[in-house]
Length: 536
Image (tube, rainbow, N blue to C red):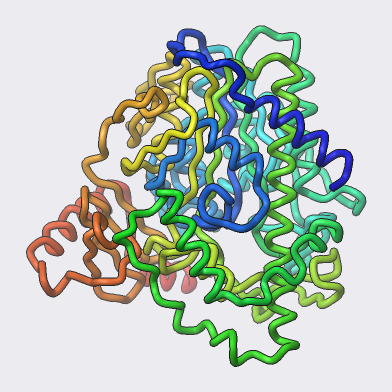
């Protein structure tokens, strides 16, 4: 372990040390708020959610704070970030898919005029200093960029992915990866700084710039890790190389058992079967096993380095004496990704040393299946593997250490929670723009050990994959597939389809889903994409 890693870890430990027993205090003053978002990190990829990966800082946030065990994202990066920032379903804010404009208001690919971000509302309503560092990905037009959406200081990546060592093109069209420093485009050509470290450094330096101000701050740290290309620092990879030679079946089982022992999942929930396209580990050659072990070692190293960055940010907050009134939230934007970029025609194929700047690769379906333990499905799917997110909240003196809440929550709840804590009401209009009503509920009550207001229902749609969760029931279907019905109380891993047994329940949920879809502007994905391609 390097001195920097030791330093960050030691200070983070002191930040989260319980000290003397304290009674929970009332949330009286406007708190600082830190949201940390991982990219393509599965439900079971942090230690406190079943993983073997070294994540001491995330784990301490959970041990000294709260875990929500049924927290949902929107299934993919752009929709999830939109839901988090605006408190709306992504279609309502114009980002029903990605940042491509499909010629429809719900799928225009950038934040529209009917939404406002957490930063905009906290800044205008309560005088917050606002900072964002990391992946933005909610639009490429100026009106949707961070510096025009309420952030005083911003270092953002506009693309879906980047090399972790520079901003050279990843795709065959030759386009550079775009980073913005406030309102100025910048390129990362210095390979001496790993992207995760650059994101951490900007966040820390930005906190330093406002250290003497009395105003509260809102810090949004959107790491690109562990999104492909899987690239990591050699010393980080070395800590994991050889640890995955037992294979994915054994690792899924180990994580499943740990999730059960931690109480994160019900013992009634089964481990979903290995994904059908994943080969039998025991039938692989020694050379193949070594290749797959290396891929997972790189992926684990990326999460490890992100966790180190989180520790350094917590250390800075402690150093500035602002820790005692700071809420820290951690979550992921979607489940583990099954992308196999080595088979994509539009990606530049580099095959240098695995994990280096000269290699473009992903960890693919087999390891993504592990990341999403015990669930099935992946990023882009609305089965649980795509939309279940790890979630921790730390708020010293407010949240009782080691708390767990099993209520159903969603990224649309983050904005209402932040506004509630800051004493800001969600407006009907903002800067002359009529806003869509916020869709989420405040989670504030959960921070003091109480129940928050339950959702009547939650909904998803992404590229034809669709779902509704209502109480114990979930109706879900992938694009061009039939509806499936699951009793989430006993089968959150979606192993026993009850659609044929309860057709009336399935029909009622479908009716409710279709009403929501019409309200927020969901279009038939096949028709939308066909129409858009014809017009190109």
